[in-house]
Length: 357
Image (tube, rainbow, N blue to C red; front, side, top):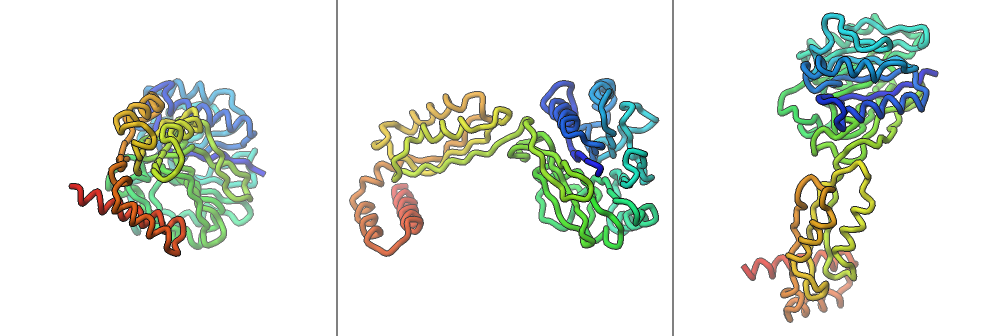
């Protein structure tokens, strides 16, 4: 069976930065897993000028590789592949909807649907016109770059695109077509796969490297054998990691140790977006808010996007308040779960903090 590695939205802009390193790692993943085809479904480059500057280096990366590389233009690099530009012997640019066929993949037909600034009936008609190019005796794969309207996505899911719509389509646009896989690009934030009505798959791999702070968590690519479901393959590439720590003054835990434990588990390629919230009892931990902020900065230095969001508050005065102690005792006498007790305490803390203003 044909083995395919599917990625998109690398947005190359500089030689040897973290995005470039992600592309090199993807190529190595393809070699290790003996794939037949690497598909890059749009926005390999951040801008057309980047394609012009980086093309010689791209040829080096794609030289002497044992698989084919199929690339379609995205909205960021729609004009990067014109005029017969050469990206490597095994690199094929699918700039129209002519099927890609090769003797190594005789049982699979791949068609590219490159980005165009079209939508609605024009786009529906273009997709439905593929019917004559699909064959019942082969596995049919469509590569595309655009915005799936069936699911709720926010603008953050598409990187820094703003409010403009980019070739928006629905899963229903593919009904009646003998398509086994739609391998897509443009959706940055995470791996997302859906079923087509005919039983096929629609897949966004997510960006293989964090492009903005909106792409959080370890990144990945789609690695699968034709005939099998899509599969997320994790990458060790640069990414942002959201860490939210809620401090609880009623637990026997040292806030500094809690932060330390989270950062000991941080992926070596990750940069944290840290928020520390909740409450502390400075009397109990023998540390002021200022001391705690200082120690958190020391632990996280060089590992965060910027200074941590320190949203915690010292409530030692409230905890020692007789009224609060009486309220807490009453709650403990009631028939409440631990979670309900904590919620009631939180309500009381907030009320007493408001009363102090």
